[in-house]
Length: 146
Image (tube, rainbow, N blue to C red; front, side):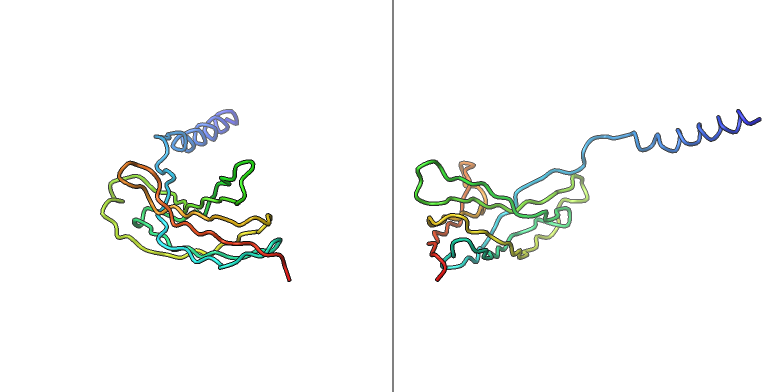
């Protein structure tokens, strides 16, 4: 009788967990959100942290803002520090996500100034007709702390 109850428990466990094994693939993807504006300081101070505020558009309820990402585009020998920023969202797939209303939001984040050279900050606003990224570009001088 003990073997039958152990087998029944095992069978129940296997059947209850088998629903978790049916994975039809990911129902989401990551995408870049367009940045519509960026508020940056006029001057950065070397070895200090400052803040930047961006406004971005979320296409609808099936998109969730994840955060800001950036690339360091500075090449050896450059006299300027280049950074490109973009807003990242996780978007759900499915028919119920189509036709949703767009929403504009703000996000504030920190930038640490580690170099004495001027910074060129680029914020991705979208793509042009040829598929190339478009940007808001800010050139910001760096001063040493007084």
